[in-house]
Length: 250
Image (cartoon, rainbow, N blue to C red; front, side, top):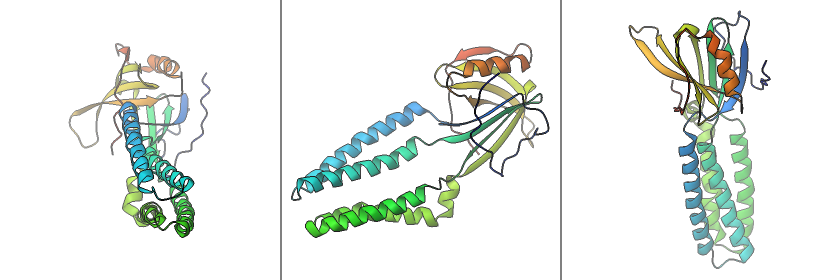
């Protein structure tokens, strides 16, 4: 019925609760599970600030030859903007599985293994470039301290801080019965199907009402919503609306 490509595998920390039941529909996806409008605005604002910093850096190196002034300013802009983008464009891994019992979804984010090697090599290469440039103009020693020096400190803090790496590592599993779903909505502002639910959490004596954002592939949310609709309890609203995409919490 659907052609969802399963490109992600569940990490060993996560297991399906109803793995013994045949899956009716399942897929995996990497998505930005937060308000992307705010994140994008922050990114472009910081890009403008960094551009201003690059121009200031260009003016500070007035005594240098033109190519080296331009190179140092461009490297500064690219590196800082890349660092900002890693914060404003983070993605979470999601896996969804639908069975006769209900809806299950897993979400996880592992500490990116490529970050440390990238920082290590980028720091080393830029340090060599700045040291070479310093033989032409000693003013480049300032750039070496600010640029490669700062990146080196960042690499050391990330490589040796387990708490920092754990902060960027998350594993969650959730399961809901069909009868616990209280509303189905097709989001008009994101590729999301929003499911409201009402459950009694383990250890609680009251109902918890919240939303489950089901992230979909492009132009698939209507098909996913139509698939879910027959399994809902009679009278459960099925609407189209703008939905909030809050950050997932532990």
